[in-house]
Image 1 (tube, helix red, strand yellow):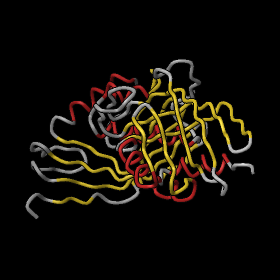
Image 2 (tube, rainbow, N blue to C red):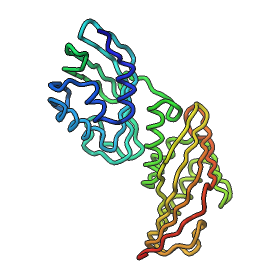
Image 3 (cartoon, rainbow, N blue to C red):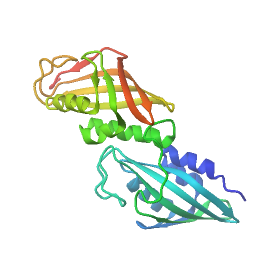
Length: 272
């Protein structure tokens, strides 16, 4: 029988690990990797829940072959972090980090065409791998956008500016335009001293040249900010505003950010 590897990968890329295990793995499956051996559906779910905690894993197949019930695949696996993972097997990850690891995977199918055994070996991170441009329409690039917003929400300019061109331009409307990585990083670093901004992404569409994000920005005051541009805040207050953010891309990096409000700001005072 021919294994529908494209459909398997499509399910993998949804991030729904429970559905992946239920559809593609035999009840008595076993996986062997550098992280250990995991048996049965419960073992697979436990491993994937740990591996994908704050990390999106996105396979890009380099080569694939099937002979009978044996399948072999060379995979460049992209990992995109949305939280800190000091225990991640390939490297300590922070929000906004992305790494690629070369995998060789051997799948053994049972009589029903489900995966009964999976064995993987890996190379050191970034060794011998292909790379995508950081942002764009590929599922891995969409996951990288999630890592970017996580780095921004964490107030980590070292990481979120990696997604910018050197001449990036920011158009907020409420303040004069800013140009260059340093100008944008300096603006937000100063703002974050009193008001932290976190992003909740509702949906995104992407092409090779543009990403459009429907997002809620939440501004939380950690100190009094009576002159805050969106609205005056006391420590503990927050403002939420729905925005549409259009990112123009060049070579997969952000060269222009244009933010347009999609609703009126809503202020919530601390203590109700």
